[in-house]
Length: 254
Ligand SMILES: Nc1ncnc2c1ncn2[C@@H]1O[C@H](COP(=O)(O)OP(=O)(O)OP(=O)(O)O)[C@@H](O)[C@H]1O
Image (cartoon, rainbow, N blue to C red; front, side, top):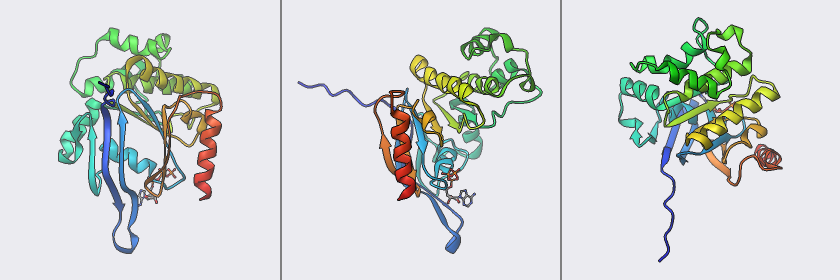
């Protein structure tokens, strides 16, 4: 008897996802019947030329915008069946966000920023858990600093600690290294990779940078709102970033 290992459960799934902006002659199809799953405990990079639908995919998968038709599931919950209020609660409790511009609250310390998602969810943050989250991103000694007193890389590390503190079903990262230099980018990508390898978290990252994408287990290439190509294999192996850059170049030529 052969035992086929069951595929990893999906953290996020889209089925026949279609998103059309505008109507009539102005209509733009940003997602065109996209079917795609992000398995639990994996790191996926989403790439594609400008206008290929990356941001739309992230917005719809995170419940920040609604599909025109088709379905999105997060942790097995169909977002289409939820009203605005329930989607907000689901986002708060099950999804972590990391943005290019960090989006920390300027008036709060690093520790207060990290515990914010727990407070918003009505949970009392344990000081030890917040300390541990900051230590995990190498900022144990910066807990009382405000964002303006931190470098860009440090601010993004706080944002990662904040995204992970609720142990979400998925972390969506939108160009998380777009505003960082090479060294800070490497640290941030290493932390996202460690969240997946060490804690079984699921990360979906939109990026234009082949080096950033090389940290992912799989790269999904979009064009015209459809999957144009996919690259699996091992993350961070020599030549991976060059291979990804080659695939992107081919996609942009076609
Ligand atoms: N609010 C909107 N109203 C109308 N059209 C939109 C809107 N948002 C996006 N689009 C269109 O949908 C398509 C997909 O856009 P999207 O922003 O998802 O692409 P992207 O791959 O993230 O691009 P970029 O890399 O330039 O950020 C584009 O043709 C864009 O012009």
